[in-house]
Length: 322
Image 1 (cartoon, one colour):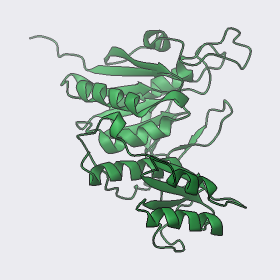
Image 2 (cartoon, helix red, strand yellow):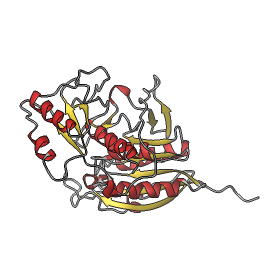
Image 3 (spheres, one colour):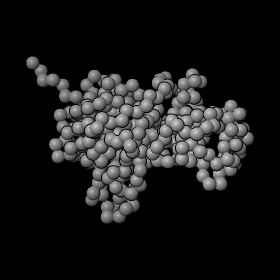
Image 4 (cartoon, one colour):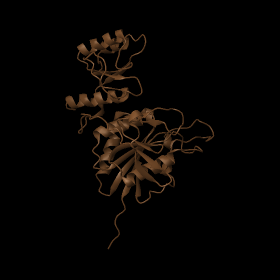
C-alpha cells in the first residue's frame, strides 16, 4: 500500500517588509520587497506538509493595485482548487495588508480551506526579524485549520479581515489589532498550537457584497474618500464633481458618531443630488456604530474609511453588473 500523499502548503509572495533586506542590519533603513519567496522561507520547515511557492508580485504594499489584487485572486483560485492543497499563505507588506484581506474575504471562494495573510514589521535580516515567527504561525494555521476562509496572522494572533487594522507604524510586534472585537485566536509558539480566543470572538456583521465574476481593473468605479475636520469646506468635492469624469461615489470619514463640518456636508449633499452616493464612516479608530446622527441621504457604513471605500466600490460593481 502506498503512503498517503502529503498535503501542500502554498506560499504566494507579493513582497513587503517580510521580503526586505538592509545593507546594514543594525540600521532602520531597508529595501522592501527585495528578496524572493524561497529566500523569505529560508530553512523554515513545512512541518507535516510540503511547500509549493510562487512569486505573484514583488512590491512594497503601498504600491498594491486592484490589478495585482485580481492577479493574486486568480492564483489563489487556482491553488485552492487543487485537492492536495491544504491551504495558502500570502506574504504581504503590512501597510495595505488589511485592505487586501478585506477584498479577498468578500471575493474569494476558499473551497473550505484557510488562506492566511502575514507579513513583518522588520526586514528579513534584522537581528530581531519577526517574519520567521509569523510564517511559522501561518504554517501552523494552515496545518491545523482551526477555521477556513481568509485570516490575518501577525504577532501570534489571528484576526478576522472585517475587524483588523494596522494601528502602529513602529517596528513593534503588535502592529495589528481588532479593537473591541479582539483577535480570533492565539498561537502558542512553544507548542506550535492555535487556540481560539476566550470569550467567543465577536462575529462580524453580515455584508452583502458581490461575489464573482469580477470586471476588469479599468471598469472599477472611482469612489473618492474625503475627511471631515475643523474648517473643512468641501472644496475638493465641488472641484472633482465639476470635472469631466467625476467620482462615481463618495465615502466621508466623519467626526465622532458621523458628524460633518457644515460646509463639507453641503458639498457632499450637492454631490448626492448629482447622483453620487455618499457613505459615512468615522475617522475614529474604533467605535463605528449603527446609531449615528442624520442626514439619511448619507447612510452609515460601520467600517473604517478605507474598507468602507472598498465596500462601496464592490457594491456599485454588483449593482451595475460588472
